[in-house]
Length: 217
Image (cartoon, rainbow, N blue to C red; front, side):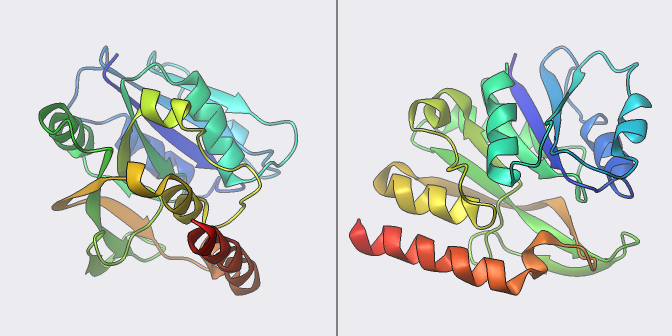
């Protein structure tokens, strides 16, 4: 199998249907990719929404019995992934139909790339466009396609990081982390009142941890 889309979710039942519809509408053979949902012990209607998608043969979902955080939820998906490449999508976001073909082709043609990111568009709670963002200068943790075997061999995400898990990965892997950027906005990053990144206290705390990793090399 060529690619896996890993969707992590915690209480995003209001948004996950739009996310999954975009993931399942890729311009890619359904035999060549899968969608893996890892629900991190949601207490809302997420499971009911997931059941609507049972007819899709290339979708699987896993339910954590207790909340383990986004890093470990992503690791569950990576361990289960059958794709040569994988890309993470948060359950409150959605993607362009060409994300998989563009990013997978790029990695196939550029063997020196550890991973490749795409640009993204900020949208509001209703999907209205707010602003285009460039991943090279304003990186986010999703919309980045990795070589699955490399991430597994290098230890995956640090499950202790409930925020800034992508920054920790970059800092820990340092010279291994050769990211390329594709300047096409293929990812839609939804802004709403429940965004995980709006927890400023937690974000600042985990930034201190990342800075320590960078300092100690």
